[in-house]
Amino acid sequence: MTRFDESGPALIQAMLTLEQDFGTDFTANATLAAYEDGDQHVGLTEAYINWKPLSAQKLKWQGKAGFFYPQFSAESVQSGWLSPYTFTPSAINTWLGEELRIAGAELTLFSPGRVRRSPWTDEGRVGVFGGNDPFGTLLSYRGFATHDRQSLQADRVEFAKYPNVTGPPIAGPSWVEPFHEIDQRLGWYAGYHLQYQNKLDVRLYRYDNNGDPTAFNSQRQYAWDTKFSSVAVKYQMGETTLLSQFIDGSTRMGSNLVAADYRASYLMLSHVWSRHRVSIRWEDWRVAGQQDYWLRNTDSDGTAYALAWRYDLSDHWQIGVEYLRNSNAALSRLTMAEPAEAAQQHWLVVVQYRFTQ
Image (cartoon, rainbow, N blue to C red; front, side):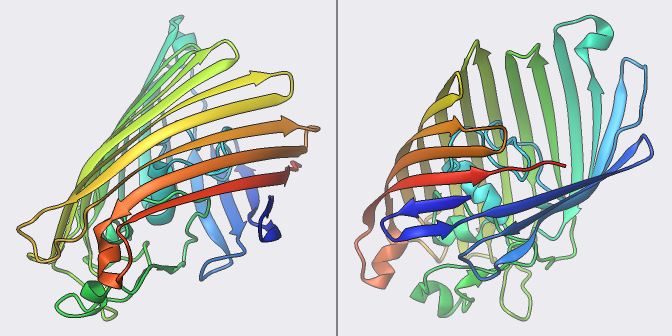
């Protein structure tokens, strides 16, 4: 994917997804991504084994194990956890792409509607994992953001050198390696999907990394105790799609150092005609620090809207244009002698090539 903006053309993203079947029940999947920016330029975003045995039963089992995204999102549904709607994901899915990945296993019990001669299909999912202990670092120190870079498996994500983070009593680094295991504890998540024909898709999830907030490693990366509930909905009306997601949760670190509640939501409308797709998205978010903890300037909030047009030149080539405006405020900027309020906007002209074999 190549971007054209005021700084000129740049290759912003390249992804290679490999899939290999092993018999009729097992499939190996791996996605390798390359980015121009960031600490690590090439690496894995996902690598897992999928198990889906053939069965004529009304209730079926399937599972996966490895390093992967859980299916929280109704937006990032393409290969490589990309979106077919906008080029820049929502603040919710930007954050999940930065800080969340499952290094573990997931088991699914599902009941296809076609087997029961019903328009309804439902499934329940449960997963256990390790290695996502710093999850919540970026959200608390920096706040939500909107961009299109996913963190790679061994990545280091840098943020501003906030004095009250790099100084005592936290004395931590101005970066996070989000997929580290620190406290030797397992996290879990559970979800329920409900689909009505090809019109409605509802996804309900509860996530808890079960972190020990007092544990830290030799680099003073702490384990964060982070949990949230998520609701994502997709509704298809002919060639028009309505999507929405709401997330509500909390995170804390240290015995009494940092704690914050957060919530975010978006609403998107997308329409397809001929080879065109136009999508518009509005969203807002808020992080509210708990005042009885040492670090009190974790409050942040913002709103953003995006407008995107995509056009399929062929089965492989696509062009598009996106405008995004993000207006936000973060008290952490005051510690850097910067205004708390900020507004960013961008225009993207994108050329994208996809190939399959």
